Amino acid sequence: MTVAARLVTTIAAPMDPASSEAPGVLHWPDHRLLVQRGDTEVVALDVDAFPAGRVSEVRFPAPWPRHFGSVTVSPERDAAVFAGLHAVRSVEATGTTRSALWRRWDGQQLTTPRIGIERVLLAVSPSGRHLLTVDVGQWSLSLHRAEDGSLLRELDAKGTVPSHPQNTGEDRVHWDYDAAFVDQDTIVAGTSECDARYGTARHWLVDAPGMTLRGEVSYPFPVGYGWVSVLVQRNTGDRRPQLPRLEQWALAVDPPAGTEGDGGAAGDAASAAAPA
Image (spheres, rainbow, N blue to C red):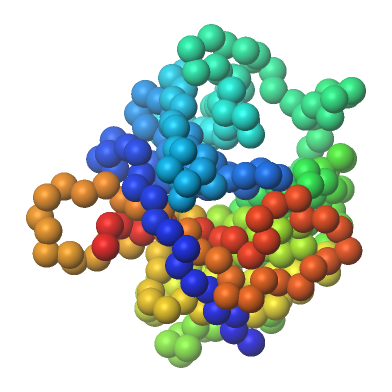
C-alpha cells in the first residue's frame, strides 16, 4: 500500500550550511518549529506561521560547539535545551542560563525516567504521553510511555519493511535515526540510510497504537535521504551560493482518526531539500 504526499510549501533555512547543521522540525501539540544549529547559536522559526507571513526567528547562543551533543527548543521558544557530553543546560535567548539540571516537569513533579539501554530518542507524541525510540543497531522502533519510560510496543524492520526493489543481495533493512509523529496515532519513519546505495529513499507510515506498518509514502518527485534533515542537491543552473530549504509535505488523504485526540496538525509531514 502507498500513501500519496503533496508539497505544501518550502521554507529557506536561516543559516549558512557551511557553518551549520541541516534544519529539522520539532512537532509540538499546537504548532511546529524549524530548528537549525550553527557553530555559535541555534535559531528557531514557527513553521505554521510561515504561509501567513508572520515568521519571526529567535536565536539562542550555544554554550559549546555544535559537534557535541544535541539541542531542542521549548514550544514557546523561550528557552533552548542543550544536551552535551557531560552536562545539560537550558538557555534563554538573552544568553542567561535558566537551569543546569534538566528533567521532565509535568506541572507538579520533576522526574528523570530511563528509557531502556542504548536507545535513541526520536520523537515525542503531540499529547506528550508517548515517546518513540530506536535501538542503536536500528533494528526496531519502540513506543514508550512518557511517564515512566516503559515499553509499550515495538516494530521490527526485518520481516516488516520490504527490501528496496534494487536490493538483490542480502543487505538488511533498518530504520533511520529520524522519525516523527504526524499526529497522535500516526508515525512517519524512514529506511533511507539503507536505501541510499540503491536509489530513491523510502519513508513509511506507522500506526502508533498498534505499531504496525500502514504503507509507503509516495512523492511526486524524489526527496531527501532523511525525512526531516538531510538535504537533496538539485542542479538549478544558478551558481550563486544558495541556502537549503525545508520542504513541508502533507498526506493527500489524512490518516484515519484514532481513539485519542491528536493535538496537532493532522496529515502534516516535512522533508528537507535544497532550493529548486
